[in-house]
Length: 171
Image 1 (cartoon, rainbow, N blue to C red):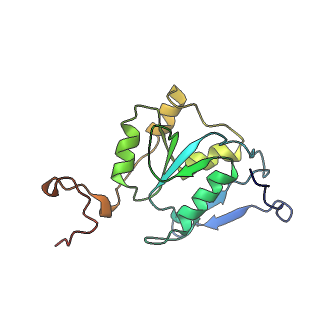
Image 2 (image 1 turned 90 degrees about the vertical axis):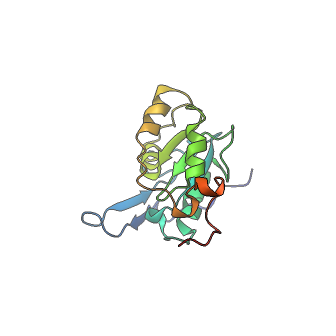
Image 3 (image 1 turned 30 degrees about the vertical axis):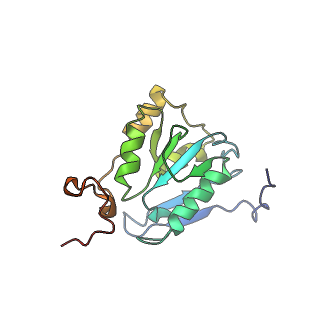
């Protein structure tokens, strides 16, 4: 399974400032070996990403944040797939998530945990494993995810038979 990357210079953490927020809140990307973070914390977990991750860089239309989120999951031994399925353990919810992925994950009745980046990072930073799917711990994490708004590109309009309106010419 491929060798690990080379060691960083003296274990420096990747710190990304997020614009706005009180006093420039910073998101610190967890890395195995930094603090209590453990390399295999996500071993055996299948993770799907939805939305954008401005904390990690890139805005609308830019995949940088999503790419960095994927790298973070993989660095901890997790596997990132593109679609929610029966094998999905975690749906990592960013800003403006896709309604279809969230709906599908929620319909799995606790089998798939919804988490946001802060929740995942908090666990990884202190070396905690994620709660097992379907447990009360997983349910508590899922309930902590608040989604303000879904991606406008994927609103399901009943008038067009539930097809996403990405390609439709709106008003």
